Image (cartoon, rainbow, N blue to C red; front, top):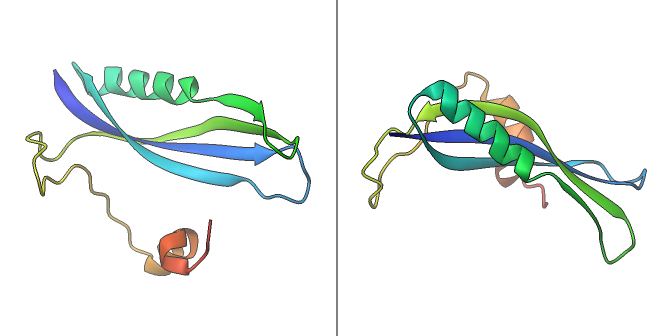
Length: 108
């Protein structure tokens, strides 16, 4: 068995018109015999997170899986202090900064 990391993109929305959807990117560890099976497990895990409920304000909140963004073997299977689990590369820092709330100063 090999350890994989899956990047899942989920969306939460309310049934009110004045609230924009909120997106969550999560990183999930999975074990599988190959990448195809890991991707299947990632999809199933993401689907298992889908739910709807009523919040304290009486609004219907819905969570759904939007996309399995990526599935890759973990970079260092030792899983010890300082182990690197996942890395990805990009070319447009401004675009990354604009959607990353921790960099853009946006409060979630």
